[in-house]
Length: 89
Image 1 (spheres, helix red, strand yellow):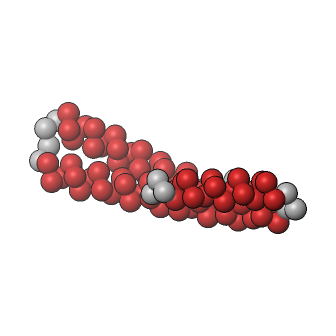
Image 2: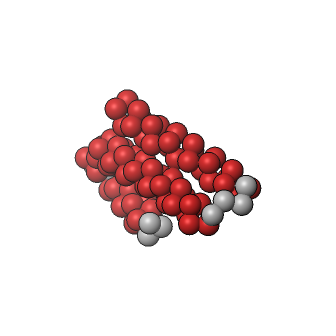
């Protein structure tokens, strides 16, 4: 992973991790449901941001290199891989 992407992705993942720990504490402490949901949505937002950064890195590195190759089988594998991951969003 390119260093600039890695740094950004890790920052978002660590923020999400901290928020998830807070969500767990809130659930264990019987906090108000709407507060738990709000904190959970914030964590999801950071996860989504990290996903986008990692995805962009993949497109600019592995995917780009594979598509520039002359190996048609590899190109088809990369396309199938992209379709599989996009179907999970």
